[in-house]
Image (cartoon, rainbow, N blue to C red; front, top):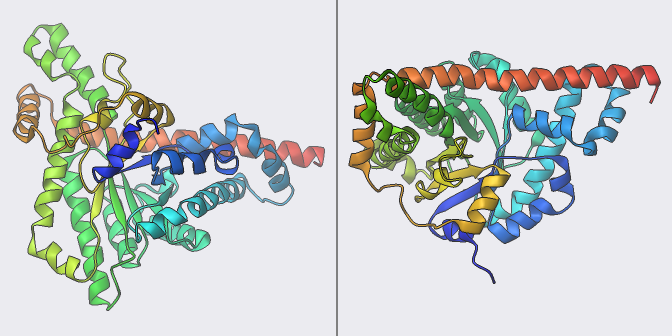
Length: 376
């Protein structure tokens, strides 16, 4: 058997998920092949991924034509198509979930990005998605915004698996940990079991470097501090390592040990936005350096392929923690407020999901009307 770096990552305690889904790969055996060959252990999706898939592949045309005859809106069409894809994918990952005893094999689906700042509506839609899909290995993606925090707590308390998405800062990550822990404690206080409840906290990495590098380049061009050139491409990895340190600290608390005794499983850190956006950096930059136990890395297809071919897996996540702290300190001294960066990226991240979501709904509405007129 040929060497497969992705399988070695699995042996080191990190799960590899795919940050992509479309109808063809689910039904033609490609996804099953990835599970078998690469040890793929899950899928993440988002409105941008579905916009590209549904508008870019002919596999959906028959469904769109069929749904146009009975759907009252583009939203109804969207929900039917997406729930079908997510459900089929979850069925393929169910054996992975069962073998991992409920600690892997998840497929994530996101609430509407328009609900990112509305806790009550987020909870309502998340519950609807959970009940509609009715599978134990579904994760509902909820943005880690301030209004998202009480939604996360409520959903965990209800026993719904949650993928906390759009995390960019350490301050917000700490708040997410507290919301998750509180949700588990709410279940304990209600006399409910903790064993089936799973969660991940998704840090978006390459977007951090894109914005920080842009600000560093401005400093370099101005001549105010050319030494900061050594910080290019360093912010996201440093933040990921510091986040993992926070996670490890949480595991040492009495609060967590009490929950473990009740059967709780950890909220793993998930590295997202791991496709390299700057061609000056390695195409596996956000994989190679961040391999560690009890973590997840969700990779776009091209990054998955690249790592399979030339990855060099080893446990590196906990290396250079002091250097990671020094990187963030130097950035702050240079006038780059990383928490402000995180807030900007959160706002932009919500917008980057709203725009393709609305674009997809507009496309579906146009096609719905077209098919209705033609009587297809």
